[in-house]
Image (cartoon, rainbow, N blue to C red; front, side):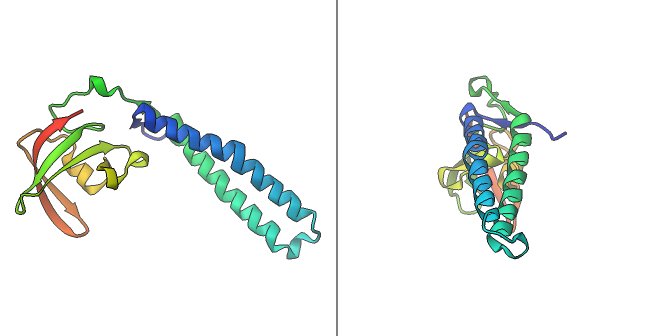
Length: 157
């Protein structure tokens, strides 16, 4: 059994919508492609049939993985979040030590991450470095580009 992953209601709805799309649209479409290819004759030399079967296998694997994620998903009520430390679904304002550059990150589950909007996964190097830190603490973040230190300025919901 997988460990639970924490999502906002919006994030979980997005996952469930994606799963519904795969089950109700993509799966029947692939089944029809396989049936059409099968009707074209000899399956041993039918590249269209083999490609559709391979695509079906990949889709089924994605559906199974997403079903597992949804089954282990837990919704967090952001209004009940403790903001004394950086946890999932908190927004952390940091100052990079050395450059003084300030930035805000919202810590989210991997599937909700979007670096363009400042949402980073709790499993990312920066997310791991910030988790559990309080205002005033310094987070040492090791990334492929090297080590960076961030001072926690503010934590909000």
